[in-house]
Amino acid sequence: MKKTLVALSVALVASASFVSNAFAGTLKVGATPVPHAEILEFVKPALEKKGVKLEITEFNDYVQPNLAVDAAELDANFFQHKPYLEVFVKDHGSDLVAVAGVHIEPMGLYSQKLKSIDDLKDGATIAIPNDPTNGGRALLLLAKKGLITLEDPTSVVATVLDITENKKNLHFQELEAAQLPRALADVDAAIINSNYAIPAKLNPLTDSLLSEDADSPYVNILVGNSESAKNPDIKVLVEELTSKETAKFILDTYKGAVVPAPASYLK
Image (cartoon, rainbow, N blue to C red; front, side, top):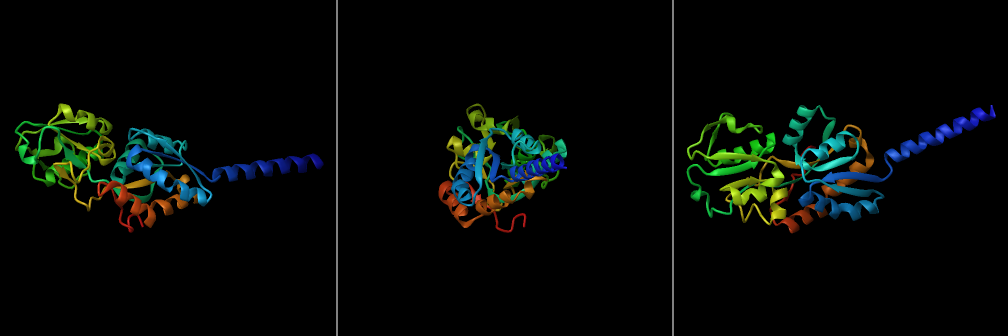
């Protein structure tokens, strides 16, 4: 009987230890460097005051951070917008969920060769992201400005095959999003996500030939898996990422190149 009680006691301690480790006050979050990792670094001290240690892992692509959260190697990631997440989940069958909207990064068309969109010549080459949603987002920007016509002018997954009118005979070079700033010297123009434009000293407000409007629907979100999204520490992180202090940090730091998401997003 005594041995049974000892064994039961050990089992209970082990079980309690497992539960406490599940929500042990440490969050592992993956992010692209700018602005995502910088915003996470800003909220880190506030989280520590609330008993949550934040460990940030930086990525330079859009695939690995999702795979890491899906495999529970990370608790969450912060780099993508909801249309990208939806396509990724559909394509990979991933167990990923949107947790909170944080900010918007207007996508812009940049060039080292052109001073105005009016200088875009017939047959010019434009580089765009090669992932489905950001490639579609880039084409939607061009379509909205009347440079091309798309079969479905609302499709976030439009491709170059969906172009029905191309008056300037534009050529499109599809590259990984992270490579686009370095490709500027080799193309006439490139459409670049702000998280890669900003480190390259490109501001969509002051340096782009075209940029999305401030009401862009592409809100960048915090993403978890179905289990980590329930973690009480994630709720603490969301509180800090969507706080007035963080909104002020975003506005002061990025001068309009990144703007806080509407408070009602994902509510």
